Image (cartoon, rainbow, N blue to C red; front, top):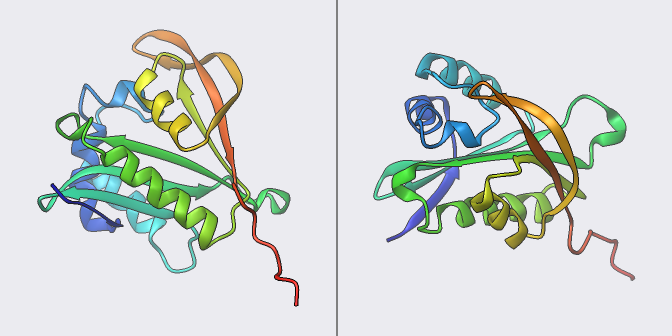
Length: 175
């Protein structure tokens, strides 16, 4: 079993809709249910446009997209350019097979070694134990808990704010 990580493109929209629309996946995400391929195609077209600094990724197993992930700027604030926010989703059929870890490793490598991001941030529902374990594996720590953070299936649920700092921030070599 070989997991291939590559940059996503607008043609991956049906896979995004399939994975994030899965009833076993979307309750764990900050996304809305009933996603569709045309909406994802528009979003990916924008995210992949020249000059955008987002990093959309997909994971493939045997040529099938089974995971999605992304690193995104937190917004236009100049003083927060050192921060990226991330999201990740894995199809139920591929969970527990290293797909999430491969996507996280790729995002952390990109953030640390290619863009010099100092801080990665995310929100995760407090009851998403599998995701919490994955994030902790990659050095994320809980920085706070938001009570009633999001409406999920008719109930307000709590979310942890987590962050990971660059383990070895870049420096200019002494010369």
